[in-house]
Amino acid sequence: MKLPALTALHFFTVAAQTQSFVQAARLLHVTHGAVSRQVRLLEEGIGVELFDRRNRAIFLNDAGRLLYNVTGPFFEQLEGAVDTLRRDAREDVLVVSCEPTIAMKWLIPRLPDFHAAHPHLQVQLLTAGGPIDFARTGADVAVRRDDFYWGEALYSETICEEWIGPVCTPALWPEGQQLDGMRLLRSKTRPLAWEHWLRLAEVAALGSTRVEYEHFYLCIQAAAAGLGVGLSSFLMVQDELASGQLMAPFGFRRDGSKYCLLAPRGFEEGRKEWVFLQWIRAQMAAIKPP
Image (spheres, one colour):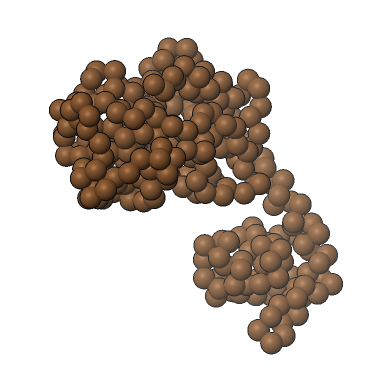
C-alpha cells in the first residue's frame, strides 16, 4: 500500500494542532493556500475528508482525529530524533549568541583561555541582542542582559551583575571636574541609561548635551577618542581602564540588572553548554569593579 506524501501528512498535522490553515501556514512559513492544497491532496489520496469546513473555519472530524492520533506523536518523535542527531553530530562545536559589545570587548579576548582549557570544543560566535530563536539561529547558548522577558520556555543561569559608570579620557577630566556642561555620549540600545545612573549616583549634569550613537561599542570608542563622557558597563572597558586610556571618575555602580546564559534546554552536567557555563562564571567571578 502506498502511503501519502510526508509533506502532506506534516501540513495536515500542523493544521490539526492549530485547527487553522492560517496559523499552520505561519508556523510552516508557507502560504495559507499551500496548506490548504496539501491537506486537500491528502484527503483526495485517502478518499476521505479530514476536516469539517464551516464559515471559513476548520474542525477535525472523526476521520481527522483518528489520523492525527497517529501523525501527532509520529512527528513529535521524528523531530526529537532529528534534533538529537543534529546535536550529537556537532557536539564538538558550541554556537554562542552574544550581545555585540560584550562579544567584542569582553568575550573574544578571553576565548583563547577557553580554547586552551577545552581544546576539543570550538566556539562559533553570533552577535545579536534581545530575544533569540534558538531553532532558527542554531545557537546552543546566548549571553543576554535581563532587560527583556524571555519566558519560561528557556533555561537561564545568572553569570554576573551589571555595573555601570561614566568613562572618559584623563585629559577630559581634570581635578575637580563635574558632569555639568559636559557632552554625554548615549547609546540607542540603552536610551535611559544616563537618567538611571544619575538617579542612582545622585549626581547632576546641568547644561550637559547628549550625543547619540547606535551601539555601546561606538560610545566607548568615542569616549576613548575624547569626544565626551560615555556611560559604560564595567565589562566593556576593563582593558581601556587597565591601560589608562580611559578613567572612571565616579567608579561603577550596580544598576539592578544582570547578565544571564540562556539555553533552549537545561544545562546537563558534562555537556558543552554546561562546560561553557562553568567557564564563563569563573571568568565573571574574577571581575572586580573599582
